[in-house]
Length: 337
Image (tube, rainbow, N blue to C red; front, side, top):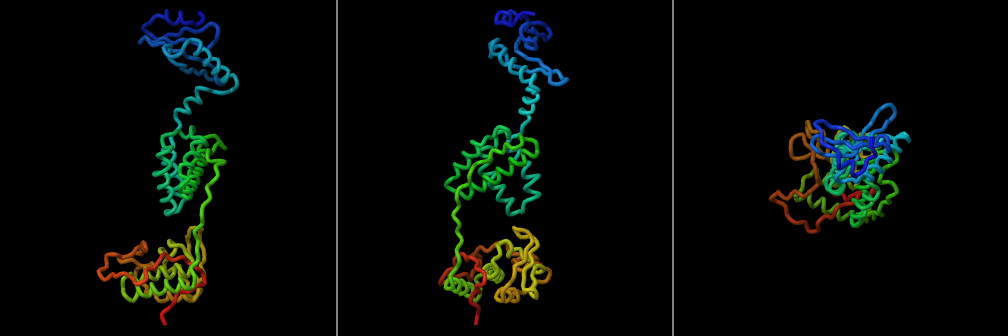
């Protein structure tokens, strides 16, 4: 067996069947000659009890010495217990971030996350994460990639931080599913942006104004009574919007002066009620075969939002339009005398 050189490679003849010219200096290094006339370098080594073979590249692209250097590195790695061919095959089979997102939705978001939160996750993934990283292989995503995406959203810090949380969970699951090495989550060590809290409590004067406006809307019939009741309950209970809009009569315990919510954002909880909230609930008429407290316009349905009803022909502008109310515990809206 000759030592592989450019002269030997150029002189290799084309046969009817594939054959190899093995290098006599580096065992396992060879030139493969195909019936088509193509010539390429290969390296053969043992990984445990298995014989493995890897293509190094065509002779028209690599020089003989370049191919020999690659072969030496692969043989050395194999002697250290690695399997370069298996690692290459695994890399080729690695899924993209888009495919990871699909599995994330199917096996985590759809199963373990509340629907409202799931909608937010999907929006962030579709609008922000996939356009930036969707084509990357999961194993190729680096901390620099995540940091750049986070930095590009610095003008909207809240959304930037939510993207960071979603990506952190996605790559944590990628580790659990064996798609990335343990401890390789690229979100690590990236600090969130500061978020400005926008909580504000209404003053007694503002609460009186809200009560006056709700009463005016009620008197003039320009809004559904259920929507007005929902606004009052939001002010009086401190509940989230979704908790009031999905409240069912079976969760209302007037005798115990409490709402017993089986599934809020933070899990099951009890909301204690003051007398004004009791009065509002007592004044809501129960509809037969409708389990919802805040009913909609269709039989058996609930009201789905508190947007203005612009389609009513009797609607007229209010003399002092309502602003978005912020809940305050222990404050009562002004009640009719």
